[in-house]
Structure formats: C-alpha cells, structure tokens
Length: 215
Image (tube, rainbow, N blue to C red; front, side, top):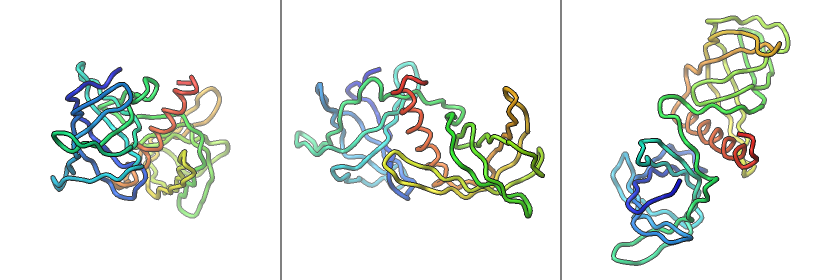
C-alpha cells in the first residue's frame, strides 16, 4: 500500500474531546514525507491550522475503492507555491484496512462495569467495536436477551490516557464459545464523541496487534 500524489485524505484529531474531521489532499511528497494542503473542516468549511506535534488518524480510499487508515503526526510546515503541512510517510505496517459497512471489531480484554436493575457486575470483554461489545460471563446473571443494561467502559490508550464511555446496550444474545459463556451487547445510546473514542481505541489495538504479528 502506498500514498500517491493527489490522494484525498480525511484527518481526525486523535487526542481531543472534539469530534472533528478535516479534508485535505497530498500535494507533494518525497521518500520521507508527504505534504498536504491546509485542511478544511468538513462541517464549517473553514481552513484549519494544525500545530506541530498534533496526532491524527488519516483515512483515504485507494484505487480499488478500499478504505485504509494510518496514524500520523504534524511535523511542521513547508512553503511552496501553496502553504503545506509536512507529515511522515507511513510505514507499510501502519496501514489498516477499514471495513466500510461494519464497525471494526477487535479482540481486546478490558474491564467493563454492567448494571441491570439493582445488580452491578464487573466483567471482562471478549471483543469490542463502536457498535457493541461481547463480554465474558463467568457466573449466573439476572439479565437475558432483549434486556437493556447500563455500561461503564474504561478505554486505556497507548499514551497512558484513560477515557470512560457511559452508555446503554441491548443484550442481543447469550451464548457459548469454546465452553465460555458470552453475552453480545449492542450499544443503544452512544453519542458521536464516545463512538469516536471507541473507534480510536480499536484502531490503536488493531495496529498494535498487527505490529506484534497477532492479527
């Protein structure tokens, strides 16, 4: 996978409370860097000035219409016929193919708090995506399929940051996988910011697994 001159990128700030997306184009490149024009906010259509050190998630559509993403960082600016922003040329291992129709789901054990009526439980996830989560049920619980539960999901990020998602979910089914009882939950009241944080978490975990050769 390679970035080509003229590729349209969508940028999303990684470490922010704001849900923002910017569009830009690769206007120059060399062996070490890619250079983009100043990005435009997709909502306000205003030009965005990105400061050096800003961490971003970039996505683009390649010729076969597949969507790819990679982590990147603002390294500085470059003056030319137009003002440009310098980004590192991504390593081949940085590219992640994104499922367009479904949320990317990653296998990741994280603690999760579940509340149903007067009962409070602490479980570990089997996998997670921005659309829902599967949790390991090691003991009998009072909730069943079609019940709604409340969740607190702590998301530990690679930089040591911890974010908490508070949401509700519908219990889709409770089933067994390799003699382990699993509850599949579908989020029902997750705002855009929380979804963005879960997508960011899944992206980081998927990239980490790939670099470790586990995915």
